[in-house]
Amino acid sequence: MSDEVASHLSEVIHSMGGFLAAIMDPEIARHAADPAASNFIAGNPQELASPEYVRALQRWAEPKDKDWFGYKMPHRPALVAAAEGLSEELGLTFDADDILLARGAHGGLAAALNVVVDPGDEVIFISPPWFFYEALILGARGRPVKIRVKARDFDLDVDAIAAAISPRTRAVLINTPHNPTGRIFSEETLGALASALEDASARNGRPIYLISDEAYSRILFDGNRMITPGASYARSLLIHTYSKTTLAPGQRLGYVALAPGMPGRDQVRQAFMVAGFSTGNMLPDAIMQYALPEIDAMSIDLHHLQRKRDRVVDALREMGYEVQSPQATFYLLPKAPIEDDMLFARTLAAQKVLVLPGTAVDMPGYFRISLTATDVMIDRALPVFAEVISNLAAGVPR
Ligand SMILES: Cc1ncc(COP(=O)(O)O)c(C=O)c1O
Image (cartoon, rainbow, N blue to C red; front, side, top):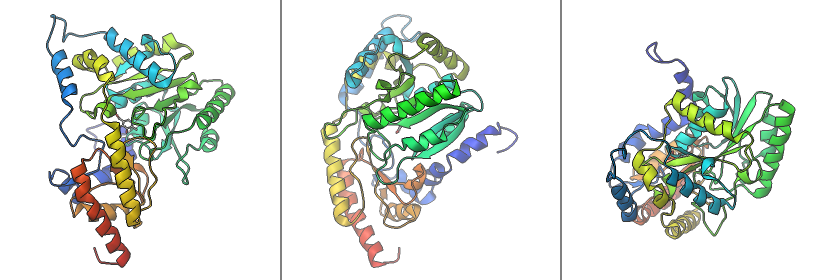
């Protein structure tokens, strides 16, 4: 980068290389704005927001006193509602004071990292990662250490994480349910991780935090249960967001929850406030805070999402694609029928079917489909997926 801007940003940009290559690929980007395209790239809405959600925002946008849009402390009813909702969801007891409001999971992750990481501390994160994990760790002046999930079944590789822990390890960042594999890590696996972190913290003489990105904790299929490492490891910072249940991620709202029994809870809570001042990573907008109790009770239609999952998984398998059925999240992660996932994505894009090349999430040779696409998009896309794989099998030139 040039002298005009901070040089450490070049490392941040480098960390997002795969994501930028995929998102800015001219042949894919050219079709992204085309309303006729079937867009499976991101967990974004493809239809208008629900009337219930819109009405809640409209209602709270009406000022009731002169302070309505003034500078604020966290809105107490929002903290209480989030704590009650999370307690019910996870089967643990959260107090309103355990909830630190944030601007979605992205804001919560940034805050959590800034609260625990000192310059040069190592943060282990799992790969395939969410796009900005490395950028966020670097932004907190930490050193990212990547550990892949197991190749065979996408489970958390606890032995590899334990082996990667050094005296400088300050935090481990996991994501469950996991984007993009759709895997929910089991209680046993998370228990083993908790033991490894307890042992390593004692060995290091300095606690290791577990940052658990739980953005999809309510996007579960087949009656699956959310399992949080917060149940087995008290030094867990649980990252939650309403971006997924409302499918309105442009309206920023989420929180970090301190696991029950968090040691030094009061200091950690204060540190969040201080980190907010130093990073400018402040509270969600007033309207979102007022609306939180209502938003907490809302959800997109998970039965419909599951029907789309089943339809697309069955159809892709029938065509010859290799794909596991996700336990949760918005995503399918099939293997691309050719090694070059970028070329495969461009071949689909030429027929107005847009997928995320696996390169964007450190999974070259795969592609990601977001089930937030509409049924009409799926109707249109399935014959294209079929044609492309059969042409590739028949050696038809692209
Ligand atoms: C795993 C994961 N973490 C965090 C986020 C960011 O969520 P938010 O929109 O709440 O910042 C996303 C969004 O796609 C995600 O998939």
